[in-house]
Amino acid sequence: MEREGEEGRRLRRVSGRELAKILRAEAAVAGMERKAATGTSTRRLWPKALLGALEEAISGSRWESALQLLRKQQWYHPKSRTYARLVMMLGKCGQPMHASYLFQTMLSEGLRPTLDVYTSLVGAYGHNGLWDEAFNTLDEMKSILNCKPDVCTYTILIDCCCKMHRFDLIGGALTEMRNLGIKCSTVTFNTIIDGYGKVTMLEKMEASLSDMLECDGCLPDTCTLNSIIWAYGNCGQIDKMEKWYDEFQHMGIEPDIKTFNILIKSYGKAGMRGKMSLVMDFMKKRFISPTTVTFNSLIDSFGKVGNIEKMEEIFRMMKFQGVKPNSITYSSIVSGYSKAGLLMKIPLILRQIENSDVVLDTTFFNCIISAYGQAGKIEMMEELFSLMGEKNCKPDKITFATMIQAYNAVGMHKAAQEVEIEILKLNRRLLKSLL
Image 1: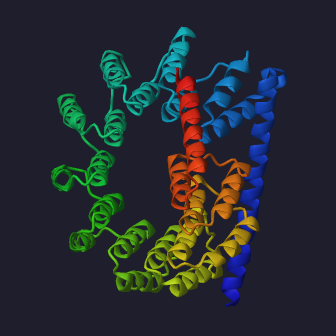
Image 2: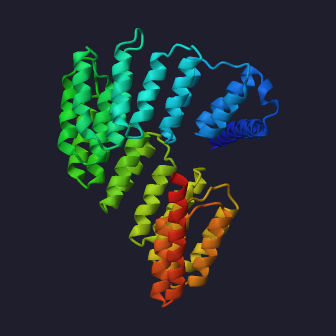
Image 3: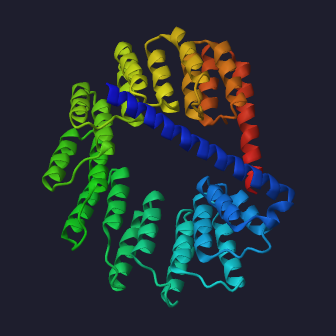
C-alpha cells in the first residue's frame, strides 16, 4: 500500500508537470496567433519560437493560424519537412486546394520537393476524394529522381481509399506496387485489413490476411489482431472473434489493452456480461490497468440493460482507480438513468461535471436533451439546450430532431415548427458559406 501511495504521488507530480507544459505551450501559441492577427512582431520571431508555434498549430489542425504565421515571416524560408507537415495537415482539415497552392508556392520559391512532400500531397488529395489529382501526382513522382513513390506513399493512398470507401481502387494500387517492385509492408496489409473490417467485408479481410501470411517479411502483429477481432466482434460474430483471438495467440502475438477493450465491448454488445467480467479478471491477474475506454464499455453495457447498481459500482471503481471520466462516460450514465426512469439522478451528474475539467460535446448534450425530451420535461430540455450554447457546443441534426419530436409529443406543434425554421436558416447559412 505504501508503494502504491508513492507511485500515485509520483504520477500526480508528472501529470502536473505535463499540464503546466501544455498550458505554457498553449499560451505561447495563443500569443503568437494574436500577434499574427495584428501583423506586428511576428515578423521578428526567433526560429525556435516560430517552429514551436507552427508545430503547435499543426498538431491542433489550426491550418489558418499555421499559414498565417508562416506568411508573416519575411526572413524565414520553410524547409521541405515543414511543407510536408503543412500539406498533410491541410489535407486532413479538408483544404486540398490550399495544400496544392502551398506546394506550388514551394516550387516557385525554388525549393526542391522531396518524397515526403509529394507523399503528403497524394494524401491531401486522397483524403478529400480527389482521385485524379492523387494519381496524377503519383505519375509525376515516377518521373522525378529521388521522388519515386515508395511503400509509404502507396500505403497512405490505400488508407485514403479505405476511409473514403473506394475499395475498387485498392487492387490497382497494389498492381502498380508490384510493377514497380515495391513490396507491401505490415502497415500496408494492416491498413487494408482494417479498412475491409470496418465495412464488414469479412471475406476480403481474411483474404488480405492470407496474402499477408504468404508475403515474405510481413508478419501479423497486435494491430492485425485488433482489426480482425474488432471486425467480428462489432458484427456480433463472437465465435469467430474468439477463434481468431486464439489463432493469434498460437502465432505468438500478444494482446494489448486495446485488444481487451475490444473484447469487453464486443461481449457487452452481445449481452455476454459474464465474459466481460472474465476479461477484467484476466487483466487484473496480468497487472493490466483498465483505461477510460475499458470503463466506458462496462458502464454503457450495464446501463443499457438497466442494471443501474452495477453501472454505478463500476463508475465508483473508475474514480477510485484514478481513471478520468470523459464526455462518453457521462453520456452513458445519463442514458442509463434515462432508460431506468431515474431522471432525478441526472442533476448530480451535471454537478460532478461542473466541478471537473471534462469538456462536454454535442453527443453528451444530445443524450441529456433526449432524456428530458422523452420524459416530457420540456422546460429542462430547453434549459440544457441553452447551456449547450453557453458551452460553445454546436447543435446538430440529432439535437433538432430530438427537440422536434419532444415538442410534437406534448402537442407543442408551434415550437416544433420554429425549430424546423431554425434548421432551414442554418442550412441556408451553411450553403452560403460553401458557395
